[in-house]
Image (cartoon, one colour):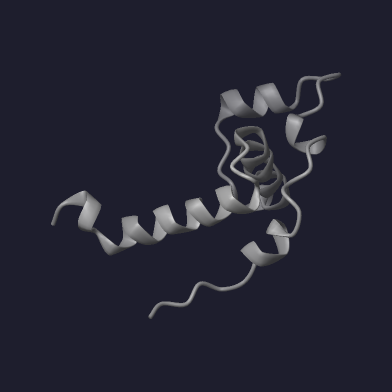
Length: 84
């Protein structure tokens, strides 16, 4: 099966397109949205030792703590995905 015909890849691309649309296709807003998701669900992420050192340096707040996500995206992203 070719990658571009893969239904999973197609669903991922569609989801990314919806997120981009809701962020007004503004790359910075899309990045901020994903950073906010990382902050919100940080308990689910696996962090390696190098990342822990960067995140725990005193006096350096993480960008995720100071950037808002696209409006209304956080609540919509919590809805379960349904397949047809």
